[in-house]
Length: 317
Image (cartoon, rainbow, N blue to C red; front, side, top):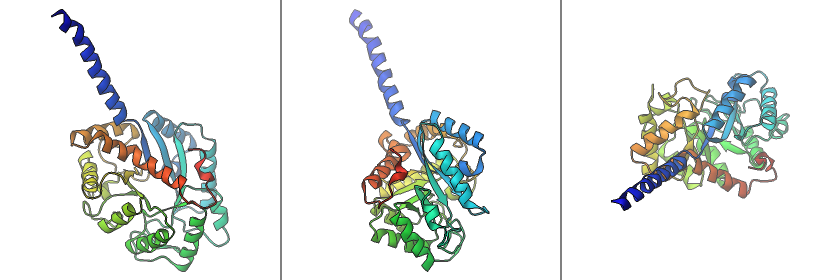
């Protein structure tokens, strides 16, 4: 009896330590492949947003400058580049340019010199480069020229907003160059049909290339309306069941949409998502891969791969 009384507290203590370690592992970090806050928020509010992200365990954020409705995109991109370079935070901020409609032969080098991590050729509509998700255009001759220059500069191409035709045309060029395909924020067409969602064939192309897909939190793409954690889980389950758990990450689209899933509207809410996924039967390992490890491994692979002469975007990550 005395031995039991002596051992029991240690057993309780050991159980608590094991639970705590599993909890830390489950919430160890978040990498977000798409966030529009730097486009929408004033500097002061952007700083608050990133500080809150840091407290929530966010490690890396691709901050997107959405240019579609801007009169002077290059000026705004330069501002974002400066903010990223001087901002003091433990969150690694990487620059993304969403919609390269404004690029010309005269300014392309100026844009590439700003060293974005990634760019998207279009938003949802056709431009002089390629076809957007809601339209029918293809990759133009000028678009091919711009695409080649982007690749040569070691900058990633985001496939997220391309239509089916342009996706195939751009991915073919990237495959010939041995590039890993990248889609920052999307959902899956077999779960919810939408022009912005990836088909099974598109997913296979990205997975086969060793690339990465960011599952987004846009309600219209998740379920066609107001979404819940269950809808997020449905897309994750579809992907894991059909393609494994090595190529799926997160691209929230925070500040790029107002229709976020109920209960998943801030980075701190990712604890809810993690616990929900665990209750639905996903393993700690799979959850950590989706929230953190897969994107981390993708960054490491492209860092060590053939990225051409310009790798200074990495800034020591």
